[in-house]
Image 1 (cartoon, rainbow, N blue to C red):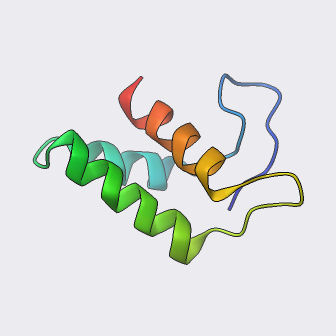
Image 2: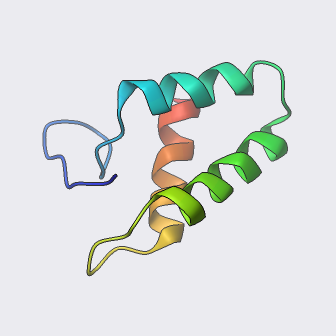
Length: 67
């Protein structure tokens, strides 16, 4: 789910579908609830590469959703 992407501000590649989904749910959930959903998504659906951590993925996706 994550790949280094040097052509954007994000450290990882997130599909437009993933970003759009979390932007959508952020419109009716609190920021805290949205962040928890992002954390659960990363824990269950993402596999960090060698030097990546789940926390790095979570923070990057949060930044993408709330930029």
